[in-house]
Image 1: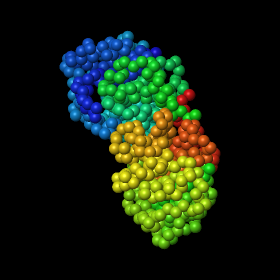
Image 2: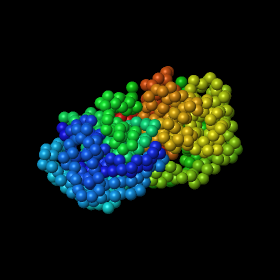
Image 3: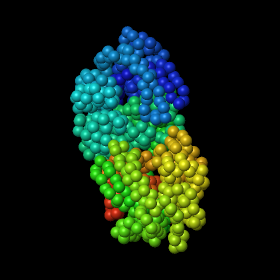
Image 4: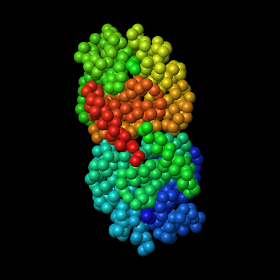
Length: 302
Length: 302
């Protein structure tokens, strides 16, 4: 079944130990939709400016992604500049030019309203809730957020979380949201805020999914990768693999969820091997399945 | 088969978010031997002072640990004082009174020389090498080290590493030893220094074993534990479970090594649930097996 993602389509200017890139295609919805496109039909709602060309759009279209929902606005596309030092889990932001993103009012095209799965990428929780309300019939809603919203829009975020089935955040965000330095306790507190499941991403150590109903948590590894050229988009690609795989399956049992965690890790691990979305643009099913097997052998107890 | 551990038997004065304890039993050899005692016969070589009582020794004897090799010296026992803040992976040292440990010259009792497995806990790499040379017939040598020795005795340590089969260190130590901020690359560099296998401990995220011969790495989880009362000894308890399980098995194939990684995580997870060695003193086989199953369900892909 198809999945709709609402988030940012943007440009990134990046510097890592492996080099620099100027104004390359990025954004949470871009990474998410490319990663998810290997599993299911993907639709995107975002806003871009006049500097977003047909060539940029073609990156998504070539993967069969429906870009009807990408609105063209007057002005420039959201542009983020950042760099990474030795700690690849932490980016130093050089600039954040919101540009057309500043006035983003997500509009869901009519032909999108029958989408079964929805992913609310990291945008203002007020907008996330608006989108959620425009899609009353979705089967499952995934969501992301960040420290900024936890700090400045906690109340709004708490309202949005009641409408999210699976929240995907990282360790620091979970601890900040719960106000608790113990990760499992923080997980329990976040689950009491609404989501039925919580995926906490641990960067190079993988990710753990916790469940509100008391089902055993499950941890998927991240592959020990020699050369992380550019960590940008790892979390969004994880979400794309995770939600994309779920959307591709008919049911939502433990077997599907645990495999989805693995596919999330797989897509995140591909994303960081090259700058930007380069690696996610041209993967083969064989590459994905081979990496899945590597992940399995990394954790499989004989 | 039996295992010999050479390391510290000490007192710890600790402060964590859960309380304080003064001069409780600790030390790398103590945690290691208690954890290993659930799997195999354990022998200890260490030095203690006059303040080490029969009651302290009884903690080990009650677990069937052979304490013949614990030397009594004039003076006080090694005493460490430290505390933990929110980051449980990092202790703040308040004092380190080496006392009798300062002049520790490990002497292997004659009746110990037939021991098949040897673990060189975190002591001066020069002493580790001396011990290793006194045990030429061991089947397998495990070892630990720390930032201090990497910084002040790198050359000596490099010599010792050539005589160690399996090195167990944490992320920071591996990166420092290799001079490389990428963990998998650091692992490869450390393996080129001598050990056939390298276990890198990731604290609450588990541990990964890397092999020199190119066999797939394997990652075991750490359990998400709500209440880490005292992280002291987690790494030594991991080593005790890991090496103890290996010593208890006849062979050393991937199946044994992967289970050993799990048992390492299991024993580490018990250690941190209470202050000091309290939890490791009275475990049941059932508790250990139940936790092993919890770890398995945490990572088992259906």
